[in-house]
Amino acid sequence: MNAETISFRIINSLSQLNILRQNLEEIGNDIALDKKCVFEINLIMEEIITNIITHGYTDRDEHWIDIDLWEENSMLVIRIEDDGIPFDPIVSEKPDLKCPLEERKVGGLGVHLVKQMACDVAYERCGEKNVLILKKTLTRITKPKEKDEGRTC
Image (cartoon, rainbow, N blue to C red):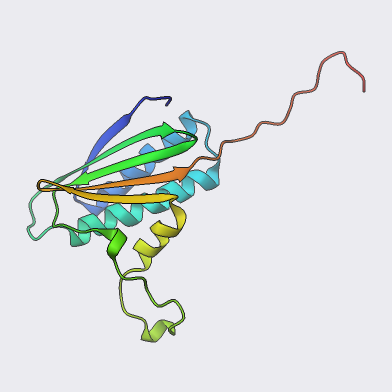
């Protein structure tokens, strides 16, 4: 994935989360990411895409969500573009995590989680599109060192 961008599209349907997960797992395998890293990337993406699908549209029409991923300086850069209503997760209110669960306001925990797990989150409204760029540090599978044949140490 060196300087190579992987792109795919999904429609604004929660059933597409399976396609998203499968694509992310395949990418993780292709570039030898450890399972925890793939899990965290999937969790970040599921939170963002679920928010777009459930809160981003005022109609029931089919909309495309475009996803681009590339590696840059040991980070996975994720660019998500949608034509939903404007929403900047960076300025969203931080949830009160000290408040008892039964008294806590609904919403905000997913965005808070994304901000905690991603190294960087940037948002821009480009014309009629939301563009969210996330960066996540990559951790690779480490293979055990192979024994040198013929050496006795």
